[in-house]
Image: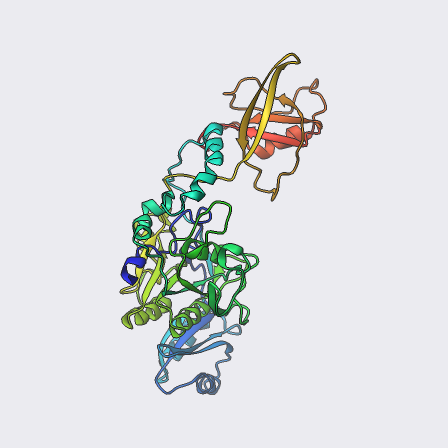
Length: 441
């Protein structure tokens, strides 16, 4: 069953709770001042630092790593000039107590490329139909028809009663909001997210209240059905572990990732998933080395790949740890449908004795966490040409009325940005703006 679940537990299958924005490949931009060393058998960090001091090398310890498959430590050389770093690295690498030395520079995360995204037309009628059929979909939850599940053939496993029950999946990511009801609402034995820890802040609970990526990945894998859409993760029967190795910023320290991966292994995970890439395209990268060793012990390891597709063929071939021997490199896929949460409203046109009312669906602006205004408003259209390309791209005419009590209807066009349009509307006191545009945006 594990082999079959492997196809489903890739960290980047889009559409479980939201369109995925996985960590992505990482790139280094300057000479590193931080390093990771793997120590020879029988050595420890204390004796290593004593050796450095004897050589006159001033190192600031970061973390010590003592695991069954990796013993080493990481340190910073803040007092060393850039010109001297190469010499110091060579000196450390030549020590008999050191097996390997690698850069540990913090890596900045890239978002996955949007090139080639396929979008189906979403119109008001289709959105309303989807809204009205929501209850029916929930009733048919046993018959898995969610587009992402059909694409990944999860529906076939569901038909066989395979949900991942009895499988432990360790996720190395940004932590998780384990209070979320779709993720069990708790952390610890007996909870959906039953094990793990926070390496980023050195805490026992891997809680994420600012990044959100780990919560998203956990939802892809194992979201429970107690949500308004009746949607479940790929394998809602699994037991999850979470290892937090990054904070609010989109960056990852390789030494913390190594600790998370090793701990996931030592905690008995059957599958280890990491949605990060670490820049290096070679399997000698330390994060890839660690995952290779775990794969050799019979544990399935899954890593993200392909986040930098726009950079050409070479980058999309991987990035550590996806390039590791035996590591399953899983790229994201674009959903055949683009789910959206839409608000249903209505508009009325006509005279007092002959009116027509129609429903329509719209999406709240991305800076608003809730509907910012509700009620009945008069409508003001800045143009009656629905194909206009430069609507409100210039200051509005002097005879434009005060727009504070209107819903202002404006077409998004190619002539300017919506910030420009908003500025021009704001000059006429517009408070409620509704943008419309091409079906595909």
